[in-house]
Structures are given as structure tokens and as C-alpha cells.
Length: 64
Image 1 (cartoon, rainbow, N blue to C red):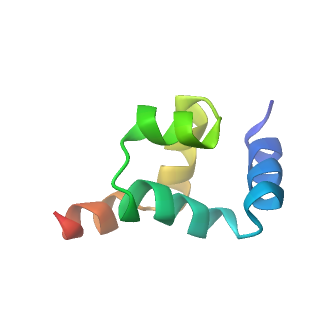
Image 2: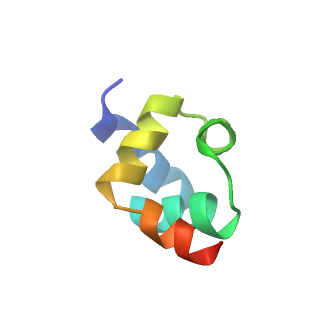
């Protein structure tokens, strides 16, 4: 499955833009890549792709 397919599936499932879904899981819930990927039902590689796509790492580090 391609990244765009994961994005479409997650946005349909959660009814939100993927960036917000990723912020909720990666930053608000403080899930790491493996845990976040498992929670969303996607591969870890796809999870990390979206973290980088939306540049979420700096925001997560600010919260620590």
C-alpha cells in the first residue's frame, strides 16, 4: 500500500486531516513510532514518513 492510500484510509476512519491525527497520536498521546503505528494500524515506516512529512519532531521535542 502506498502512503497516499494509508492517508486516505486514516482520514476516512478518523474524520480528520492526517496531520491532526498524527499530532494527536505522536504529540498529544506521546506515542513513539512503533506504538503509534500499531495504534493506527499502519507500518512503522509509514508512521515515520508522516512524522517527517508534517515536521512533527520539533513540536514533540518542545513538549518534553
